Amino acid sequence: MSQETKDILMDAGIAAVILFVGWIAIRVILRIEKKALAKSRLDEALHLFILKATKVILWIVLVISVLQNLGISTASLLAVLGAGGAAIALALKDSLGNIAGGLIILVNKPFNRGDTIETAGVCGIVDSIDLLTTRLHTFDNKVVTVPNGTITTSVLINYSSEDMRRVDCVFSISYDADIEKARTLMENIAVSHPGIMTEPEPVIGVASHGDHAVLMDFKVWCATENYFDVKYFLEENVKVAFDEAGISIPYQQVDVHIVK
Image 1 (cartoon, rainbow, N blue to C red):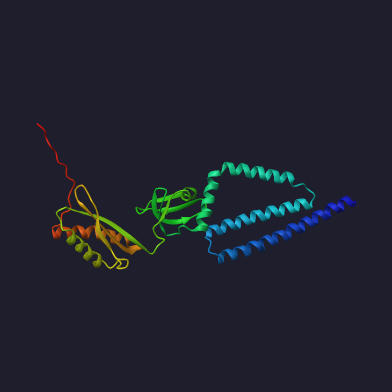
Image 2 (cartoon, rainbow, N blue to C red; image 1 turned 30 degrees about the vertical axis):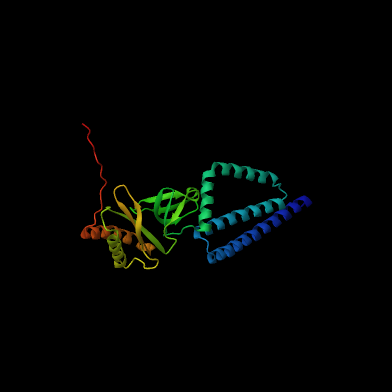
């Protein structure tokens, strides 16, 4: 057996050892990383992305090391990988933008599953957050899928991030009505619902003088989950109380003058 053949077999044996040891090392690293991610506060969708990215990078490094040990030039391979990566990035720029948006959402956590949010003209409850899209269902049970890139570049309102919300209502009364009487009626309504908080106190007052009526603000605080119950309660019971007390809610009127 010639010396050249022996060298080739030696290099192949060393490459096989490097490949085997590297394969074991990759499995150990991924296992340690998986346990570390499980103890972290990062979202599970982000766990999968990090593990896959780490696996791909480690295997690329291992393959390059094996090829270099065999005496194969890896410069052309790296050039091909770079050019291919640039081409793929250009072709998938929108998808990459959504992935970047997904990473921002999963890391910063502006909202979580189960939160009620409004973004990109859509309002609903979040069902799932993936790297590419966020899926939510609206209050009339429509499933809406929003690209993460759109969410990160749009105004986002999270209605569930705080424990309590303020319910803002505006009621109109005629200029002939007794303002103090209307205020007292609204105060009584505010204390009659167990879901309305006493601290902060309800805010009741004249908001503005309209063309046809006096507009009165009625603002109360409640737990976030009771928002709509309190909202509907106020709208209904103020109308009933005003009717019983003879406080009219005027309609818009137009005076027509006929010139002969």
